[in-house]
Image (spheres, rainbow, N blue to C red):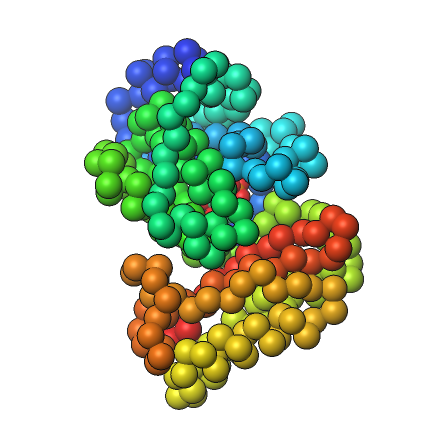
Length: 280
Ligand code: AMP
């Protein structure tokens, strides 16, 4: 069932007293999204997916207008997966005229991806908050692929006492190691090869950490170097953080250390990809 208006969504949620699993997406669905849907199906009586390319989370010079929107294909995939409902609001359905309130993730929303994309997480948290309020799910599913986003959403739910369980799901990758992303559709064959440097940086840094090279600065520079020396790739950042707090780890990496990466592939347009992995 496809729901577009808030009224249809509200009627749907009111009809469903059973447990509801919610998978928010921006569409152009791939196996990463489907893994969230599969888990939601296992854990809930009903599953609802939202497809909404959220203008609030895109910067002025980013890819809002070119973001892929294969809606018919996405709806078919949802139907094949046995999803109960797909919520596809228009921008004007979700954002009422004169809306001014936003959700600020605080200091951590300004770091890492937030440094390059200063408004991004405010946009993400605001839309996720609105969607959670409307759908009122029992559980909502998010991928570790967007690790900082997942962290900030958990933090928002905790801080604002939102009554929902946030379920984190592991990153799904191609056989090559490339993390699935809707933005991979922008890559040509050569860029696809270059983009593999993100995963190899994670693997090589993991290997080094696991063979007792625990100096944070050296591990960070190993990851940076692998990315910087790949043709057609510009490093945005490489940080090693504690996955429980998202703060940079100290001089020596310990359990819970996670490498967060972002890089631009190509020049015009620059395709920004992110990835991350636990080190120990
Ligand atoms: P998006 O459509 O990119 O906003 O993503 C919607 C949800 O799917 C988010 O919770 C993402 O973290 C998750 N997701 C995206 N790519 C992957 C992936 N490769 N593996 C697992 N989850 C993913």
